[in-house]
Length: 395
Image (cartoon, rainbow, N blue to C red; front, side, top):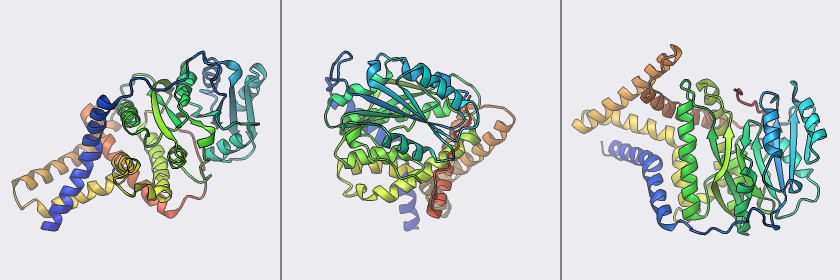
């Protein structure tokens, strides 16, 4: 019984720490250590660097016109912005739209890939083809369904006035105010993650991975991700730290994401992302040691314990199953765990009946995203041969 108690409390403590106590800890430290005057480029600064925006496209005609417009209409000096599109064998009207955009805007370029290359392969090819790219040029990696405010590019770039700044993440906002699906839950998750990363940047000078929807990297800190990786944003972020760079999130760099609100679609996307997370763990596990270093501390606290989440949940449940007869506390704890699992099943049934109960949907979202982690782990240990990407459904 001693072993079961140890397992139970380790699992419970790890879950509570990563999801509750660590965010509160960095929030408190950020309020104390927040840099009042960060080094930034001024908006009319003649030293503003050149910017190359890299966008992978596959059958994106629903969102492409708006993406093009938001990339070329900017407060950033137009002659310093170059927009590069790569179409990965698109079969809809995307290629014609890119051709028309390049004819209309001299700073828009496109490459048509005749066969499926994969998102990372396209980004790497576009990067390699940039002529005369300089070490201090800024690369903005963004998705076709992510739209900028007029000053988003400047807001991403301004922090690179700090010569040690290697990466700056955008502030991702899910568009709309839908009442169905998992829109509210996904929007809440992204908002909280943005905030935690901002606090991390203030406290430690680095963040644990930018959102792949939109982030900027200084060229001399950029390392292309392997073509078979499913989570290139985390790979690039960690390579920046390995190369001695800093990273941060800029709250004013607003990016609106047109994301799916359907649980099955988002679930499959999370599985793909989590496959990439475990791939990255296989590459960067040495950065977890020693655990007292700042990078290791944030890696453990913000990422690794969450990636272990499904195993911690299973461990807590199994250990509790051995302990429930021991005393009233363990009996109630086991009862609560079973009630939560039943409520998750209830939410799934109600969802099919188009009935929404907010509390149940948040519980269901948490457990199903941990299920996506578990499936992603099993898929990752089988090996990932190529990045055969399929964009999620666009609204």
